[in-house]
Amino acid sequence: MEHNHYYNDLTEESLISQYIYQDGQFNYVNPAFSNLFGYNREELLSNKIKLENLLLPESYSLALEVGIAFAQSEKPF
Image (cartoon, rainbow, N blue to C red; front, side, top):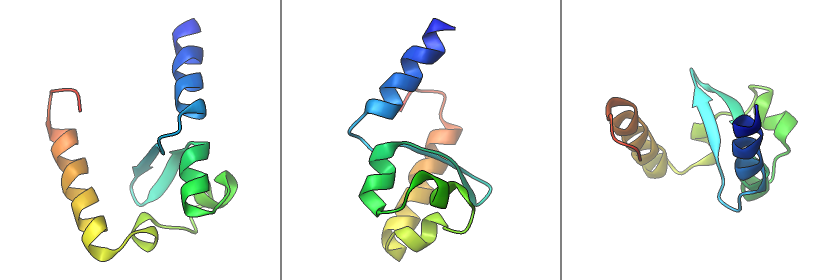
């Protein structure tokens, strides 16, 4: 599918770090996210590194609030 390829290119080439974190594990990280935190993709996807260990406690709390609000919203973020 051409659309999937297009969106994959957008996330993989983006300078903005992007990730999918569900049930306490990373399911996807783009290169910008890996570079930001200094871990390679395999390390982040290995489930040995948790999001709460990468952020300050107050930043983690804010990330949770924003994530929950986004998940409950029907509007695009």
